[in-house]
Length: 461
Image 1 (cartoon, rainbow, N blue to C red):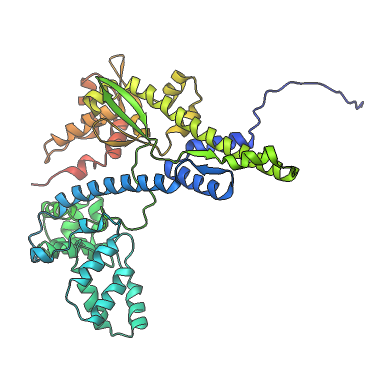
Image 2 (tube, rainbow, N blue to C red):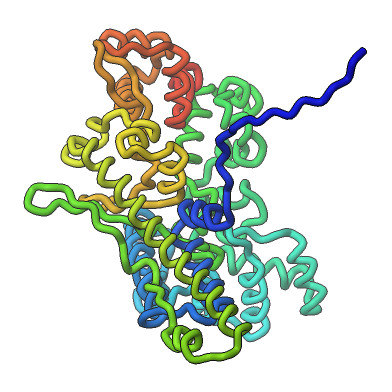
């Protein structure tokens, strides 16, 4: 056997991922909130980097936007949940409004503390109630262990502790300070003066079975017809499992602040970037002078390195903005009919399609839209990602999956509730409209819409 060595030359193309490229990619996919945090960190670590005006100005502008969005959220929630509460009796002057706390960005706990303060309690009970409020979690629930801690730390009896738990449970919003989901729902029932033993038994013992649509089984267990169980479900569906929903809990890390706006100007749609979202970064001129005037080579190298790093950050942020702007302009070009007429007119549009149109890599577009939001000309704020949809074939043309989902939803909403349509029947109806879609896809879209199967939707007579 002969052993030999052979030297050959080969040429391969490889992409070397530099640190700069990695940072640029990282910045591209950051949300604006994440990028603002990153800029904060860079400002602390890089002495040559500074904000043209003041970082606090940019932050305050974001906070103002956050508060405006939050006010609208609370106002909508209040219209839905607070206008029809005749069971919650207060003198008008004594009513503590959640709106009083929005301007200072106070939390649900501040709202509860204010109600405790207006409850005319003696000093001990007020102290105990404040302790309870301070230990409510972000969902509005109270851990059972807190009551034991309360008794030990404040040296009070269980009767005193439970009396104050009852006081806090009587505050707004209904269901607050519950120790379990069942208790949360029952607290709301009682606040609404709904005294229904069947509803309470289902809440206490059969919520899981109810979620699976096992009406017959529950009916047998509690001794009523399945139709009565469905009527109980209708009542339960109107209750709120998370009483803090719509309130600022103090744990939120960001808000739906749009990265980009779509405006209609003189009949044309225009893409406008939200330049108020981030501070404008510049290089401090003092350090530029160091390079020119200093004889200390180490100091010069240090400053050069910091300036290079700062310039790359500024350039990367600008590239991020330009990339997102190009992507949004291409989206608008493809979705004008949707912008004019609404969801039913959204066209199939994939990330790959937009990437090809812009001669970009698919992953670049994906990173550019990650965790980014757009404010439409109608005022609606959407995830940019939600503007991308798959296509379904219809008579050699394509329509979006969103349009098909709307069609399925409308078909189900208009069905005979005592004889709900199966996925196969819905598939046939959709096929008759010229849309080539399978029963399996119908089932998938129905589940994505949060709609139960036909057997679970059936209303019993």
